[in-house]
Image (cartoon, rainbow, N blue to C red; front, side, top):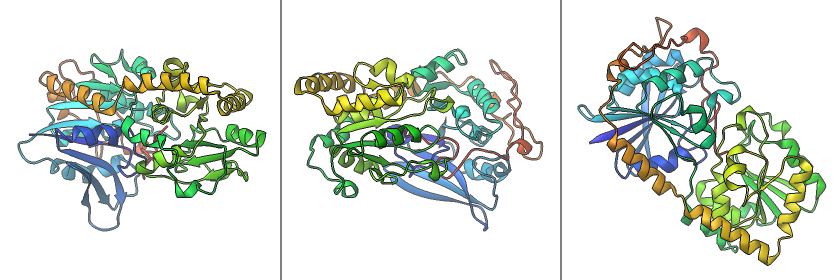
Amino acid sequence: MTTIVVFSHLRWDFVFQRPQHLLSRLAQHYPILFVEEPEYDDGAPFMQRSSPAPNVTVCRAHTPIHGAGFHDEQLRLLQPMVAQLAPPGEDVIAWFYTPMALPLLQALQPSLVVYDCMDELASFKNPPKQLLQRESALLNTADLVFAGGPSLYEAKKNRHPSVHCFPSSVDVVHFQQALDRERVHPQQADIPHPRLGFYGVLDERFDPELVGEVADAHPEWQIVLAGPVVKIDPERLPKRANIHYLGQQPYTALPDLLAGWDVCLMPFAINEATKFISPTKVLEYMAAQLPIVSTPIADVANPYGHVVAIASSAQEFIAACEAALAQTPEQRRHMVEAMLAVVAATSWDNTAKRMAELLESAPPRANAAADAGINAGTSAGTAGVAPAAGVVRVAMPGAAGAAAASGTAAAKAAPRRA
């Protein structure tokens, strides 16, 4: 039996996105231990376990240390708890979403190390100071690297010999429930039409000024925004009578939201934080067969520009929304045909299957000797990778540089349902 031990900067019960999609499917073949960032507790350290999905166990350490995320000061307490996670003698695959957890690798002695790079975390607001160096160490240590979109693949492909592009995918059956336009989400039942909607995290990737301009241009349009507000001042969000904030929504409720929308919005800011994103929602919107208007995100414009209206300014964005609302039956038919062709070519089931095939076919671990050299970075103040065949030594600063360590509570470093 092989267990996958996952280290994540995102909470399992945060926005349902790439990690949950992939790991809930891989759990059909492997037990999944999903290790979240620790939570402050002034008592004795302990590991809380829960099972949110079949064969998935979420592990959240409680420690009396205030350092956020996988902070260096947490490591001495986390190491022994992580070492006890997998049953004795069982093979372990170590799976990383955050390089900040790399020093915990030494507690596992894994047969395989995977880095599923779903975001360029260093481009997000307030990244940990050690992040770039620790990612370099992870790239030197990993056996497989999965890139969450074409832009990330281009950024990583020359930094590791086995990088594979696995863009965001879609659960078509789930989102085609929105084709029943009679479905009602109670929070928007009394909001009139036309409804233009967005769901996702409202953070530094979201463009509040753009949304304000859209709302002002057409006061009769109702803008529905569903998602948690993270890392930005809520006062920055536009306040208008025709803008409605619904808060974070469960994954099960998203088709009900979509069923009541006339246009789907992707009002992303164009900045460092959005340079490499591959938004999951674009394919979900397509599965619901609704017109989509987006700012020029690279991983949206390049593969989907023939289906998604791309707008580079507020004026263009508003005009595209006007055109979407004014579609003729013939225009809508062509749009739906194009969307069906796109979503038919991908699924989370197929993505997870291809990943599992790579896990099974990976050669014996070449870097195992290096794992023992990954220091916890506590008393010595460093966390380096010991030299081994094909491994470059990368020193990582210790606790002194970790005051801004990876954000916790499900998203301070990089939430993403972009």
